[in-house]
Length: 158
Image (cartoon, rainbow, N blue to C red; front, side, top):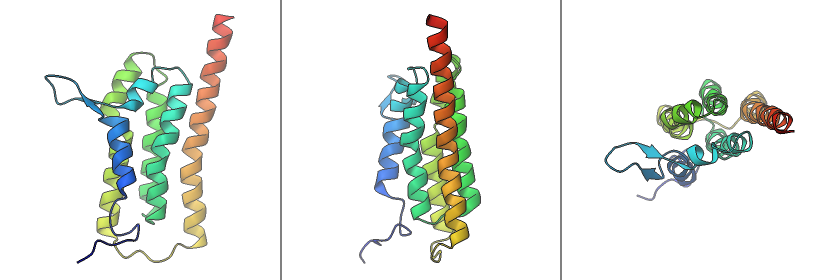
């Protein structure tokens, strides 16, 4: 039997790849702890967390395409926002970011939602409006937080 070709059929490979790159690209030798691009780019104040949030947002976009329930999209948005907020705390925030793994959590939420609701109907206007808000809002908040951090850094240096 052929694999389904619709987004509802399985978690998009792109989401899994993004979660691996962002959260588990390299394993710390002698441990089972993975470090990903999110942890590395998060070291750049403001810009790193913004870039990480934007890349992690692709998983949420895939979830919208798969028409996962709105509450699941809200949890996914919260994971991205929390990831950005953790990244604001120097050093300790970056360590917490390694433990949080927003992209991996969001892929699990996506997989569970697709498994529970494999035959979601076509999206309604209300779903699309809620999804748009839940995808855009965390990214906008991450941009605002990133800009504020950059402004504060520039003021502190000058």
